[in-house]
Length: 581
Ligand code: GLY
Image (cartoon, rainbow, N blue to C red; front, side):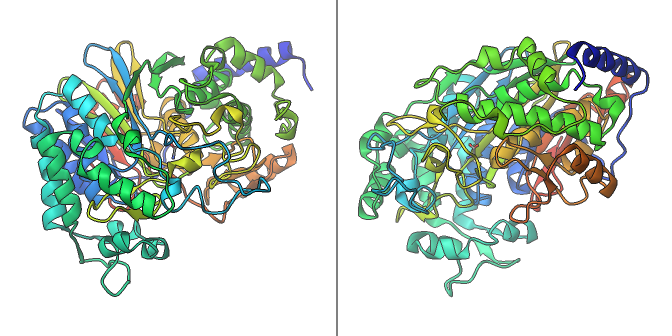
């Protein structure tokens, strides 16, 4: 192994070379969508249209985010929701930033061992399906908090399109139908969910069918009429609490009555001169993105090139180290001390770089702290308005269609976010994350998230709005989109479409999307000791939605020849769309 000083010297040399000979990515993707006044990128095209309509009528980006949030609850029921939770990062036109946490809270009757049997073993399915998996939902409170503080339009106006869509229904296209795939059995187990999301014969919807959600329309109309109290203090909470009690859940009316949105200081860091603003705890997202970027800053990624063994090795090792911190040190800030300052410190990143052997894979076991895997179906949307206000929202039911339950009469799908807690220290969760005590279950506590709604600026001007679903992989998806734009010169569509790799400390494996790495690159990585494979259970992941400001890529931005707003919905999303005006 080389000494740190030699390594530093060689990295400096490579950095200098990188600066002279930047490699520009040339991926094969359609051109980003271009607009001059506003851009909305979501996982469902009707929701994107609704967002743009709010902007064209004079609403700001926060107004559009609220309207889109309600619309996705209707047109993207696999993840769009009012029965789950989420985060909103806002960068105002004057450069100020803020972060809203409207994620689920554990019910007051929750206990640390609620998913274990009397022998201390995890009971399969308890934290992922049915009412015991449900955390207290936050979106209705979160959207109203955002609208009343930072929006300009009345709630009724913003919620109206969602009510109409739910009441009159909308015709399902191929991308919509695809988002229902694989959930028929789960939905069939709950009669209220089955009555809405399956056909009368129990079969899944097909292209051309119309999805009508009359109960959801009524619930939305009562929220439009009475505000969040309709959800947290009125008939909706009563219906959910009743169904929960009848079906083995522990939700109580008090859980709803005392739900509070938190406004928090976002996590901030700087990567190669770009200012990153992202999610603080109770998300691990912003902290871990910053930690990985700080580590990667010491490597000339642009020179080494997208997908090269050297670039991928540096990324894997940075991810390995940062995910140890994610899985062991972070939790709800109201319950645990989060070492955020240390984790986003450049000196800490340098210490980690010194431990990385440039020629050999590290081992995750060796990083196991003394004493000591999340959802595919989250959704992210990115918005920017004519004044330059930018909003990034990631919200989720956790698993696809959440806990798969709807309290009769409400039409509202409920989350299974309780699975994001550490149900048993050291045991992998639904998505393979092995987590520790900092994220243990406690009454009123919020489970640690990976959601990373991120806004980047450069020289005081907005540069990029980005985020994605993908459970524990949200962090690396968002990170890779950033690196693809800043280091590899890709345009925003190429950056979100490019095949991905992922490492999360445990399991000690490098997951790659098909074709992400050439056979010879894989051989080089294997020779270094990396176990690289396509994850058969989850071969393609993430649905990033991004906006690049001032050009479709860095070259256009630098030349000053680009469109003002450049939007891209990940090609992996069947129904998504970037829309601008
Ligand atoms: N349930 C996905 C996340 O919050 O990370």
